[in-house]
Length: 132
Image (cartoon, rainbow, N blue to C red; front, side, top):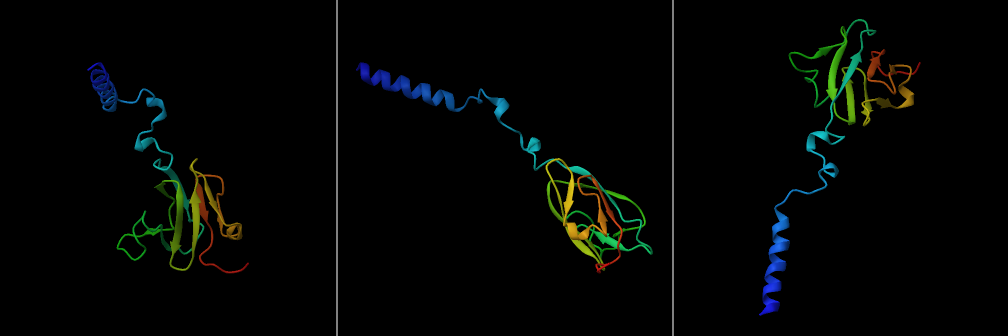
């Protein structure tokens, strides 16, 4: 009979701990605090393009075929989470990334047309992709 009582007490002790919050709450992150969930303000400046062109970032801005596309005649701020994105215009497109610190990166081959690597300001200076 003593063995049965000990077994029941052991089960109650184990089950009692299942519904309690973890004592190491500092080790747990809320979804909004996850590094990939944070959004960063990224400024896009394509005002050097003259005449202005329509542009967009698929999945983030209005498509360039929409009734209200973004136009390169003014600087625009978009909020992006860390990840890979595409800048798309009617004649020029390229991929760029936002890292966990909210800084930009892109291929070095774009350096004549794009600047802002390591910053939060993406500057686009070319209308189209062409060798210089």
